[in-house]
Amino acid sequence: MKQWTKPAALVCLLTLISCSSADKGEAYIIAAPVPLAFAQQNTCFLDGVKLAEEDIQSMDLPVSLQVQVDDDNADFSTAIALAQKYISNPSIIGVVGHWYSDICLPISELYKKGEKTLIVPTVSISALTNPPSDYLFRNIPDDSQIARKMCDYAVNGGVKTAVIYYEDSTYGFRMSAGLELYANSAGIDIADRVCNPSMTRDLPDLLHK
Image (tube, rainbow, N blue to C red; front, top):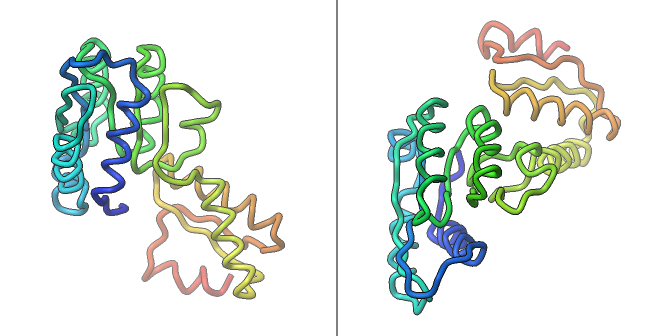
């Protein structure tokens, strides 16, 4: 999980303002649904949001803005309930959050239909913004861009044969498929593609392949 800094959070918050049709002088909220325990223990996301919010308060903006952090527990049903709550609240100018592909990909349809802006800060899955939407944005490169860079790096290092292993998730499966596609086009032979191999039991066989 990529650590968040103040500039990244600030850009996302200001993007929501620019994408909105906010009325001058009105008070608005940016919602930030996150897996709270994970965010606190493993990332600087909340610190970035806090610092960005402090900067925004010091700016001469046409609207009054505050950030509301909610815990979606990395749970689909909880995320759906929060999304419905945000969409029905006209004071919420947009959303920065929903960290996992298995959640944000299906839930993005709700935001499109509800015409509420969503910026996903941690998900690279290409399908999220393909086809493009006026309401959905990623904050990092997509899977195809990442796959190309990884394959270019391997080719430049002289790699001829490789094994791809991936986590058991929508992200892991799609990313591994993209890697295999670009690896083949780059002349790298993929000997195997394995989900969640044991690094003690399976690694010798994978290295042999």
